[in-house]
Image 1 (cartoon, rainbow, N blue to C red):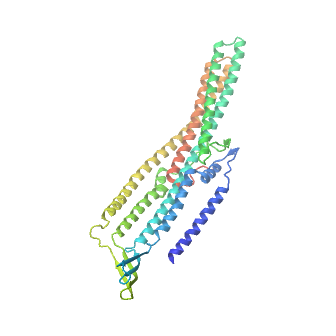
Image 2 (cartoon, rainbow, N blue to C red):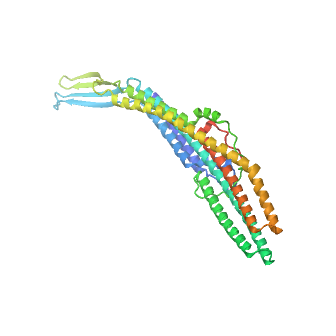
Image 3 (cartoon, one colour):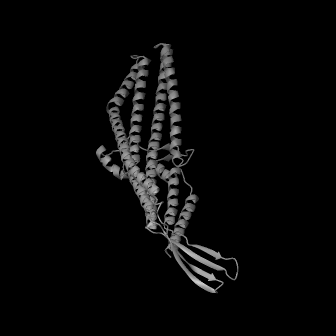
Length: 421
């Protein structure tokens, strides 16, 4: 009866999955056509990321593994005929039922349950990767938008400077060489603006690919790129590492291997086969009951080879956990160092470099208008300001990408590391 009950429960679960799939396939994922926030991007990616869908399918498959692990061996029926003559024929019909010994079925069920937990952890890891990839891609788009805005504004300034230089040349106040320099500078900034446009298009496509869209429909991302995430100390982050999904998955792998050891160990105990049937003796005209049992004698094959493989792979999983934790510690320390360095760079650029570069550019521009400076001074000041602003954007992007890497490593252990838009 228990077998039929398990089968009934499985049918209900399968039907619910099918209905859920039908509902999911019937709903259309609506990507915004205008502006998109980080929350919107995360919702889209978690709803339609192709890699996450693959992991969810594996969870459905492991449910079948759990059901199969709970099944018992099938009975078999056999017949035996002795003597072909009708008068002396003896016919035997047997029903044979194997009985598993040594808790084989219980160990299979435990192993399937552990594998189910492992797949759930794989999904948590994949969600952490999707979250981190979306965060990094989103701020890449924001940074690309800032670079394009910077290039556009620089191009406007270059046009004004070129027009001013042209007027001064016509008035005979400066050499025509200065006008040529201004035109060359304007052309160079046009190239930088075109490159910024191309970078933005690439970043938009990379973000849209995270929810399976080859061509992005959104026009721009909306967020505060200057809001750098605040995170705990490196020691506190390191303490969170034990709760990271990737570490939990490595620990579950040890449990999976140990469960396989238990399964292989139970196979050393031979199974019992019970036989019940009837024998018809035509010569005597009698029907006789037949009872019997059989059990293998574990003389040569005691499953020692498979047991050794399972034990060795369990030890291997333990060693891999130690090596993997050291690797994650190194990655976490590197990401934290990158974030700290980027934060310091942003602070220095905000307080010292950007104000000074802006002041120098304003002074050079006014001095050029009044004839105190030549255009080369203006060009140098403009380049310095442009480079400072570019460094500022790059430092902000590096900070967000480092925080995304920390989120990828810690996963659900650090749920509030991302800045809310």
